[in-house]
Amino acid sequence: MALFPNVLAKTSCPLMSQASIIDIRNRTSQALKRDTVTQEQTARAPHKIPKETERQSGQDDGKTSVGTQPAWHTEALPFAHPSEKEFTRILDFYGVQWVYEPRAFPLQWEGERVTEMFTPDFYLPDLDMYVELTTLKQSLVTEKNRKLRRLRELYPDTNIKLLYRRDYHRLLAKYGYGPLAQAEVRGIERVLFSPQQIQKRVSELGKQISKDYTDRQPILVGVLRGMLCFMADLIREISLPISIDLMSISHYTGGSRPGVRITKDLDTDIAGADVILIEDVVDTGMTLNYLLNYLSSKNPATLTVCTLLDKKIRRLIDVSIVYIGFEIPDEFVVGYGLDYMEKYRNLPFIGVLRPKENE
Image (cartoon, rainbow, N blue to C red; front, top):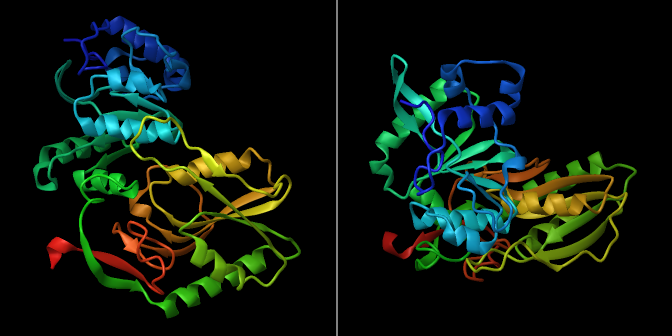
């Protein structure tokens, strides 16, 4: 039995020979470039898929599918579930490269024969991370969790994240659609941070920024609109000369228009300046990653991030955040500039919404 099955197991493309796959991995894995290994070692050794494997637009060669790709190509791929297609649209929107079903990890053997394998749904090359989506209820994913535990035991250096159905629905809700986005709410379930707690923490952040930027004049850049309350209070707690500027970007809506668009750019030239990007909440990190890349292209002297809230449990892209107000659980929060369907922004506290069905 070949140790490497077809890397696109859910497609109808022809099988690649074992020798071909081993040759590809010998050419693409830096680890395998340094050493000649046996077939079994190759099967057990995680590897990275470089950007060079990205397919050109319109090319149909039966090889592993790589994004970011044109909308027509994503539509044509034989995804096993609609959630996979939607996930690639979100990744494409933020310019995150992806590879669909990039490799199968052997998990069990009988002698030289592989008896069990696990194929993650996606590999994100720039992040060196695998992602597995599951739309099953969390109570029904016991077997998948077992395989993931086994994978992590065998391949401890492999970074893999499992997105449960609730994670996927919350990701969709962030962009205003999906079942959670349409759910009715009845006010606030509980207060996470009172006005006094917010004021105290914002004051602490302002003092820390003032200390860190002594003898400098930073430019604070806010991304509309959720950060308005936070930024307005923060700048009054900074005891040194500053400048401010605002920008806005388009957000993913599930449509076919590709890529983030800057709907309002900066009015200030930030080349050579010390820039602090002000955010309301950071969760997956995809938006922030795009903004950091965009602002870095303008050649500031320094670029740091200050966020009111950090939903670290939702992180997909590892982004550096220097100033954090509060770390919060994976719940939908409103108030102090944060909204639900453009409501609740003017609440003086930060609270968790109460779904209608919980009443």
